[in-house]
Length: 115
Length: 110
Image (tube, rainbow over all chains, first blue to last red; front, side):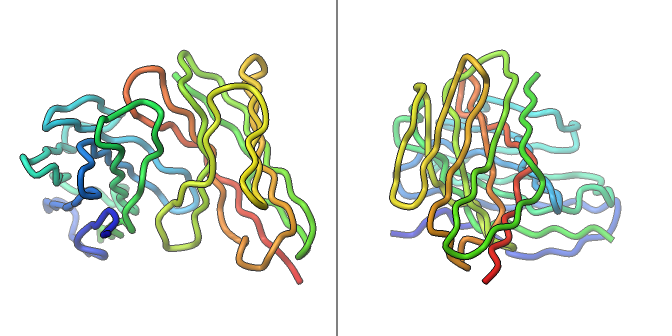
């Protein structure tokens, strides 16, 4: 079975540009979360979606947005990129019931570099 | 808000035991997770504690004390491949949001 897949794996963008990152959860998983991990730090929560609805939002500016599609895949969009947005963006999916007591499975991440 | 603290770095010898501590202060609590992350790779799930006590899984064990806001991850019979970052994460009472500590980088030496 395929795990969580993210695309692209690496990306270089210029300040002010826009970026779209994509995530496909484990088959049957309906909950997708996005995290930002700056080098040397732990992941920071950005968004959670369950059944196509936003269920949680972290402390990120409005330049960050996301959505979940009917097939439960998800996109993270970042507008007006800043140098500080350079990070590893991780997508995580969790159990079919969106239940509370299940671990999150992470994808390999998208390494975004803003120059 | 939530605050999760863990040491930045630890060094240990192959075959030895290392204990990584994690303290947390949260408004809600619905479980504590430990993840392993090798450089450039995704975090992989190691353990989950929601009740007080010790959970053992092979060479890895995790302990939780909710009253003290404290957990530790114990790695026994260390192997070179255990060199990685270990992330402590707390799930809030509502939803599946995880709040992570900064991670502890463990270096295993021969």
